[in-house]
Image 1 (tube, rainbow, N blue to C red):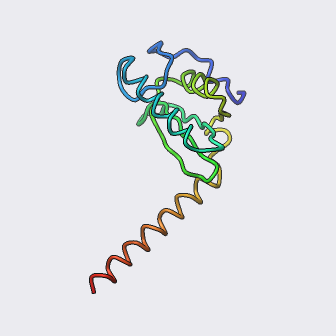
Image 2: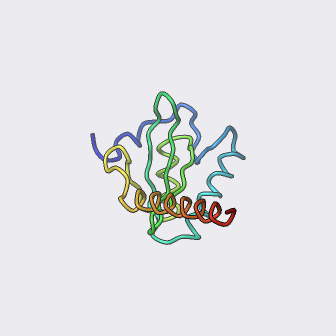
Amino acid sequence: MGMFSWLHRSSRSGSSGPSGGSGKGARGKVADDLAEWASRRRGVEVYVEPKTAVTGTSVVLVAHDGEFTRRRISSPKAAQKFAHAHELPIYDAMIVGYPQRMRDYSRRQTILRERAQRAALDDQH
């Protein structure tokens, strides 16, 4: 199976845009939110997560520093169209995995939250 061969399967819904809900309005809102998020960051890449028994198809946008956002979308084809429309590189998360910078970012955020909690406790005493 090629890197994007599963992207060429047709979606059952037939919709062509990212979707976090039902209807064109929800698809447009998610697409707009993702486009705004990507426009405010540099080095953004798109990672497509396939539909599972528990969740629908989703995309993860990852910035240069590892900051990321995840949204449900209507189909892998919608992710591909979004990425191409915004000139963003796109990857199949099941094949290439996620970038290390994403895990590093999550760890940094955890450390910062823990420090803030400790500081708040110290201020109370």
